[in-house]
Image (cartoon, rainbow, N blue to C red):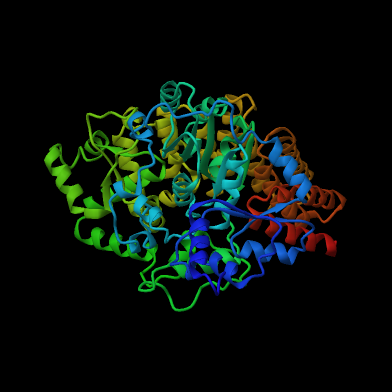
Length: 608
């Protein structure tokens, strides 16, 4: 047919682009069919999801078929037929969506491609967040995780998707929302709240829906409301460390977790090839043989001719600091609040700038001077105060690039002014904001003088009497090597939570260990205290659901303990760490952190 009836070949390519396909009982050895599978010979148009049925296939064959974009079904003919027979493919009473999704859920509706404004795709590759026209263009590569998550969805599972910062979670969420076939409502929510969840449930009234949620850890109550309903399928996205913090609160029934951080060689090569040629480097960096895999946007940043985000905004910071510092303070304040996952209201700006101006027109003029670095925030319209405007930096990548480059003296000035002038009552979703707002790592940059940082945390605790704030203050003091003060604060946090919050117990163990690991071993109290720290971590690992978090800390401390004592107890700790880390590695998450520790521990034990 390929040689004698070319139109039949075009018909095949069209069918592959319009319908999901199963290759069954066919080895894909014909040149015409193979050519039909490659996008470059079909006008670079994407095909629908495709599977191939393999029986007793060799690993090399599996890798080959995956490389040409096919999902693998391992089965013989009889078992696959029985599986298909068990499926309720055609319901006795076909369900129909009672109303138009766009009319029922205008805020959460997935738009049609003809409805969305377009922009040059190059703006996506310079670090701006994806918009629907980018997704519909088909020119952003779908990584291997697209097919993996799509299979989970089609298999009837809820999916929790995690990854590091800038690993492409939001992009993947939008690709799935636009591409996955579903006979019901498809909804996308960037910041789910309990109120929104209740609203959606009432409005659905039992209709089927698949809901894609970004930053789902902002409100676990909303997740737990939706996960219990049989008519709703959830696909939620979150940074891996935020997920670890809240994972013990999650109802994980019928849930599959997929971490998308690690890109394989094919993903890296394909992402590189999709970067527009006018901004793409001539040679791929890093090469696909490199052991450390970059995240999606790290890969893009390394392979474009634009200055890197951090470099660009370091220059912006220098220019504003010398020309108009108040603009710099506003930009950093917006970035600080946005990195804490909440927008800045006009009321917050008024409070922040009260010692500069009280004229709203002057504040709008200052925002206008920042140009495209600041945009209006239009989300969360169900629960947000519609009587005032809200603002955010252009993207979370921009916010974090700015926060990563701001000098300590300026960061201290902005943080101090913000917390002195802006009441928590003004901050939209303060419960979300404070999860990151008092982070010890950030404050160690803002307050290199421990006495100033100590005063900051004391003042903050006077307003927000949370054990979490005490915990962050203790971790900050430990970073500053003020262990006496750190012990007092972490003990107070332990008492406040009645020793029931494992993350605080973990912090207590870390501080205890750091305070004593460098002391003379001639004092028997030193070893006793270090052993106590290891026991605390063991109890956390045995009792808490966030086992990876505790296993990593335990492994790191076990290595330091061995360097100190090199005795039988030290080897026992290393063996325990090895066992736990192997167990976590099997789950497939954060492999780089686990493999780094495993490699060091195995080498240490081989020498012992």
